[in-house]
Amino acid sequence: MKAAELRQKDVAGVKDEIKALQKAHFGLRMQKATQQLGNTGTLSQTRRAIARAKTILAQKQAAK
Image 1 (tube, one colour):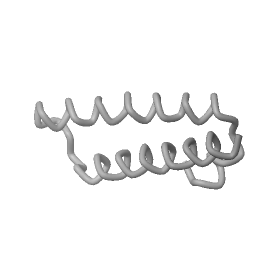
Image 2 (cartoon, one colour):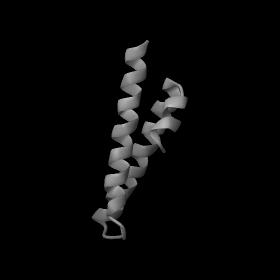
Image 3 (cartoon, one colour):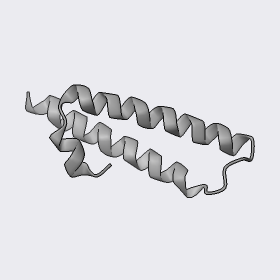
Image 4 (cartoon, one colour):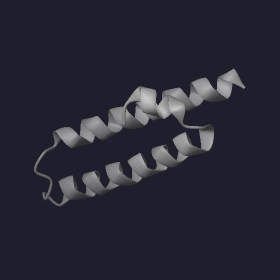
């Protein structure tokens, strides 16, 4: 999800997105541990997406 799409969501929507990304990242880590993950680049993509969402959440909470 792009940063512009995250900024359009409210705080609860961003929190839900973070939870979904963290769940996806956990699944990818488990696939890597069992050597079922073909593209390891998706791990860094999800990690960066989580960081992006957390940054936008912090900006929204600071604006209140």
